[in-house]
Length: 234
Ligand code: SF4
Image (cartoon, rainbow, N blue to C red; front, side, top):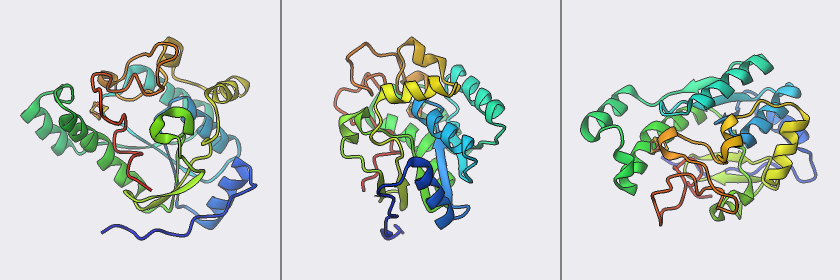
């Protein structure tokens, strides 16, 4: 059963750190940040860790990530001396998918791709969000047309949780300069033309001027370039 929309917290006029502090005080132990170790997520991790904010930092290991992503995962836990709780897809569901459709079924249809994303991302995300009241993301509004209307705080109807998007009005240049200024570890794939980095078989580098999400599921022409994590409606 879907959870009813809850009253959104008031953070107008507060800085990111003040907002995070406020949310952590209002919901102790129930604030979660999901990272996939991309540029934006690394900025959020850096802000959380440098300010010792009591946020649960978690990640989803789909089983199909780039080696470079695991490397930045490792550099992050080493630099900040933190534990990042990792959620995995159900072995039974992955086994069934592989047995019935093989390891590259996602190239065959949007339906198959969404099935794989559901098993490897959406189901683990449900577990990761369970028991939390606030979900912090690294989303920015200029990442894609679908995200233009992104608000700093919003209700995620699909997962039944309040979302806080601290970087909602940041530009990519702003993100990069934070990474540089604070020596934040980042995924080296960003230096090779990758912007939005997901699973290895479904992500490629883009050309200057391409849409931010053009490197994700590039073989799909008409689908919304979302995997079900951030497309559940408000
Ligand atoms: S991005 Fe590709 S490999 Fe990863 S879960 Fe989605 S379809 Fe599967």
